[in-house]
Length: 623
Image 1: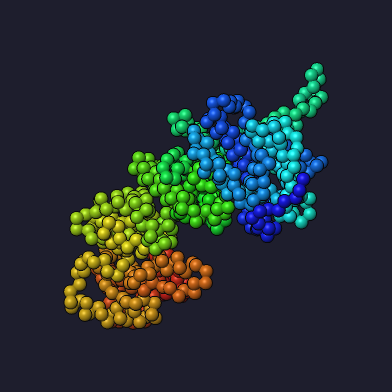
Image 2 (image 1 turned 90 degrees about the vertical axis):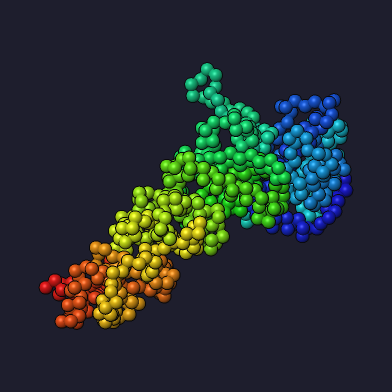
């Protein structure tokens, strides 16, 4: 027995793989189980191409054994095994992959999938083991060999005894000092890791576990015995034919995977064959998780390669605006290798993500069209996410999202889509009109809506703080521009003022503006008011509702404000009092001006600068 050196690398490369490539130590078990599955696949493949070779289905399995006293964890398989030469070639050369070579030399046949391809997974064992021993007996030979290494210093290969074909990988687990390693000798933790990462490996993963049973002829005496327990489910639901599955199967799987605790609102099962093949099950939850709108929420789908978990939350599979979707994707075209830590650069993953995005949109549109009540429930929970998706990338997602968003409407005070609004527009209507406020009830009572309602035009009610920002990004919908009912120019000729009246009122309005000490840009006669005496309009890109949102942000310092215009209803009886005060009592007019302006602020839900002074002005005017 002579000691050999790793052919392609030194201690530095092995250290790099252990400390950098894998950031989570527990995945070593996933890697070794995947290798064991590959070895069994190769045996299965041989039986397909050689009629003289027969295997019983029960012959194929993986076994995990723990010896706490010896601090060893053993992963055994009944696969094809390795000869002395193969041990030297596959394990003596870092990043040498026997699986990859097998896949290259043998075309895939009858669903034989080789998971590992880049040959670095085996060395993840050194993250938890101070010594790794591999005992293997190759198919068709009588000799067995032992490969042994304590790390980058090298390895030895020597003859040994082994009764059956296959491979045993024995890990001498490190002592727990600076880091905790005892957990990898804990039965329940190992069972949990198998369930987490390798639940859908298609061969049974067995473990001998200690159990108790009542002694025969006794009432309360128990005896211990050992029994094989299969730790994995083996056949994932997404690989079954859809015709075999019922709605309750999908719902049970949803709960088993802890995607949610109640029935999902909708699910879809996707199977795609082509240049990049994948299976997926996607769920739309019935309600938003408690932390959904917080920084702590982590979006993403579970990502598998041939039933082996690569990532618990692969955020790259979902755009942020579809971050509410739960589920998983499994693809044989994604390699279980070093690239799993940098999957965002994987072209196949990008292709799958694009297809997943399109599928989610089509499912949502289908729900909107065929299950309207269900879609409205969805939108109440997750509509804000879609709106943020439109706003966050300055309209880049307009084509994907504009047909999915909804707003409350004056037509029915129910949620409507932009397309539904357009379908009801009157022939002479130029714009999509909207009004913004805190609630449907408050918005519907805004004085600025009177003229639009009188004309029979529908108004969208914006009650989410994001709504107006979204519209600013959208700009238009199917060539129809959006128009705020509080806009300074509604492009509606409704004024009944004569030229002489305008001239007479000019000085009055100028005096009122001066009385308000720069709080408004202009005071003018209103074209929109019918029954209310006063309202605020805005000019420019920032509306009053947008100002309120920006004010609520930290460190805003009120630098961004709407350019306010005070509009007065010249047909209202209060206007006569203003005219009279301008002639007879200008001090009274100042108080009236401030009271009317403050009332306009209150209607908009804005705070009054000096509530005490406002109350005193009202008292004086009442007297």
